[in-house]
Amino acid sequence: MTFLRDTALVFAAQLRDNLRNPLWVIIGLMQPVLYLVLFGPLLENLGDEFGGGDDPWLVFTPGMLTMIALFGSAFVGFNMIVELRAGIIERQRVTPASRGALLLGRVGKDMVVLLVQASLLTVVAVLAFGLRPDPAGLVLALLLVALVAAGMSSASYALALRTRSEGSLASLLNTFSVPLLLLSGILLPMTLAPRWLETLATVNPLSHTVDAARALFAGDFGDSEVVVGSVVSIAVAVLLAVVGARTFRRENA
Amino acid sequence: MITARGLARTFQTRTGPVEAVRGVDIDVADGEIVGLLGPNGAGKTTTLRMLTTLITPTAGDATIAGHDLRLDPRGVRSGIGYVPQGGSTGDDGVVMDELILQARLFRLSKADARRSATELLGSLDLNGLDERTCKQLSGGQRRRVDIALGLVHRPGLVFLDEPTTGLDPQSRANLWDHIRDLRARGTTIVITTHYLDEADALCDRILVMDHGTVVAEGTPDELKRRISGDIITLDLDHADAGDAETVVRVAEKAVAVRSSIAEHGRIHLTVEHGDQSVIPLLRALDGAGVTPGALTVKRPSLDDVFLAITGRSLRDAEQHPDPARTDPAQTEPTEAGAAATSSPNH
Image: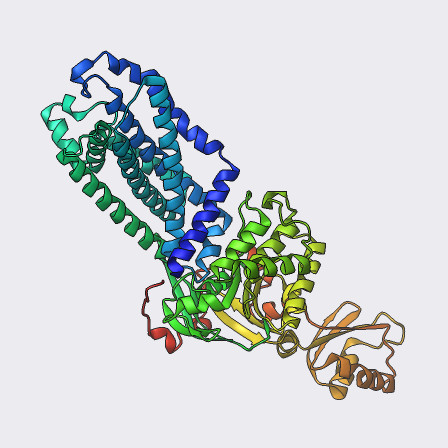
């Protein structure tokens, strides 16, 4: 009970800080909207090769949702470095609150921020490009990308606690996030890839999340990728949250 | 309130292990203000971070506020308040929000948290600043918010790490008053400082730390008396003053002189109790026909104490930290120091 209470307290405090400065949520949205507007239309002429039948947006929008989950959440570690410097983390670590709760409250905030951004992005795609996702599929796909956000922000916080420096964190994040992006089929589906690249992509858990989200958008609930992607996404999110919580419990962290 | 035995902490660094704290024993009674005094790098903050469960000791044991440091770190945390050296607020944090969050993480109800925060803002002269962000506060105000954050759950034991560093003299004196107030209300306080005057003004008892060990312990008066005695300075420029040798001879017969230093026209006598020595000394000098020009009695400062114990003045120690220096008398490991175990730090 106290664990949930502490998590809720940290979550509320973090969300309040975010609402006080909503600019960053807007800035975080800018890039995916640019992709949607300036890159998406290119795909309309690719036709069937791109997939999605008549509507390439059913393929492209879930990719963009995963991208904001990946990049938006990967960089939350920088906030933690600010909090570390200010002594806020230490101040909270000397309370009886569970250290796992201190982490999960923050991760919960990141999931909410992501859901707001993902919903706005979907609205833009619906209004501007005539995207028509399956309603139930859309909701499930949003939950999937929220899991990606949870995993990425846990990992980002863990790295922030370990490195304690903006410079190291930035180079680590770039090292990991670019291959994750390229091997996920977020921008173009991996069905376009040569055999070796497609094989490599299957090792990337994100590629399964994206495939599942695409199937859900299209309403193909029977697609095996829905099950595989969901299981993979849940497993990765739980694993990274546990790693993050353990890092938070370590001394000196 | 605190019983610690053989607390030690070794950090692994790229250049090899660094023994930041080498086995300290600390006892703090209820209602005391105890100071850890020493130069930067003496191990004060590391000691405090061990006592507040933020780092696990590599050796030693402690019971703090009724809880075992190793077996029940969360119990320890629930009974203490901690004000870290570098502050504990973000620029954009709103004073009242931060205080309420902190109190609630210590399990206070929302109403109790608000009540306690409001009272504290009043008693720390922060009235009307509830809705300010921390970056809008002055340095002294912000430091008092840090203190409020350490006190908002009304702990019986508070650790203050260099609470006045970086404050202007007025804010500093003001903060001292608040700390004394806190003690008057029954709170036990452990404070680290590298300011001698601060330790002198605030503390009931002082542990002098150097190179990771406690090198001396006592009330400020005891420390000064034990190590240096009082210093009586006689001015001998006067016509009837007599010569230094005569004065020392007469003085040694009249009072307990520990040592004497003669410089041109002046003599410094170190005596056991300066205040009780003046009259007998003057009577004896008068009987010997010596009339000194001027006489001053000075209590030695803690700076003299630090010099006597460590062979360096505190200011030198600050400027030339020398962690490599080892003094066998100071680094002998304690019995408890042998039982090094690491416990999970929940």
